[in-house]
Length: 455
Figure 1: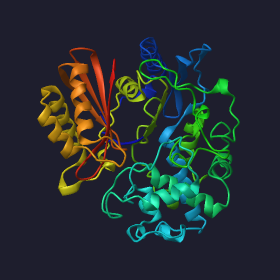
Figure 2: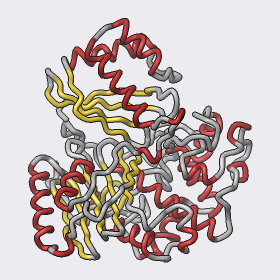
Figure 3: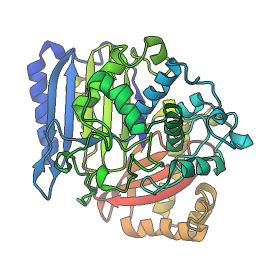
Figure 4: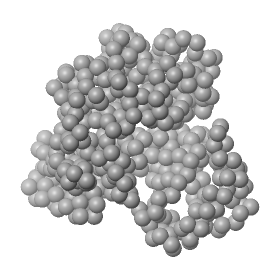
């Protein structure tokens, strides 16, 4: 899952934390100690005007072994992996080995007619039309199998006409990187990116991480989800539904150094090349999540504020911590709607359309009218091949009311991959969260739905 936040800042919206760094640092740490007492585990890094105010771990990296999180704990960076993929592509463009305007037909054989207009730029900008994914992250899919699946999967829209977040698109970029460079994705990232800026604790298999140095992820109910390296993977990196779009591991220190090199130097590429994808003068937030672990990077260049949060407990995720730290620093909240990356068919912002569908769904659940629920499911749920039937979906939606009782919506957060989290108040369980995966484009169909109780 990838979140992309853009911010609009006024000079009055941010405190000048650098004027009293020690006091701000103390308040930040106090805020995190409260969060830790309430279940947060992970690593925080906050810097203002070049001064690191806080770089510290909180909670347990491994509860069973009683290993605490430290500033150097290895964490999952999720979809921030895509930033390495984007840098790799831009480096190859700068080296004259490809063009952003190249069709994918220049790299893959037997590209069907509906996909011949897809360019490298469309893949980078999530405008190719590919769906979110074409299989599970840990399914043993080879590069050739990933390419075949992608080419045989119907597009959500004609290339270039909309934006819809796609992990598959970035897996195809990783395949192109491997074909052009004749090496593996992990090796190219190490040689062309990490070694150029002196990073040694970032990657997948090559750094040979010690298991005790890796943070475990924990579900909201406390179940150990283990580490990324404990998941199934190929001998040369993640399987291909994940390669290039997620799965990488790092430290907050390494990631700070990576983004510093990207935004504030020409060590990775020339400024003109960087400008094809990244704008160092705009405030931006980049984050990713697997539903449990969340990695978030925030940058406010005018005010010289940088925040990195890696959370490893689904019961208290990075966005909630970001809001609390933002209060201390006087920062604006990120736009959790991700409007900049979502399609706007018919001139109406996609976040508004998605929220309308989710609000209607919650209303149907609360009224618990079987016939009405069935009509809603038939209209708003995708009929995926091999997935539940309309009747099965309707029964499952109806069962949510039986489980939660009367519900009140407190908050709806939208993420750039189409996932939605609606925080609810339940008469039976108190706090509950409704999690949905949806398309970004008309008619905004729901592909999956589940409920988590207890926050």
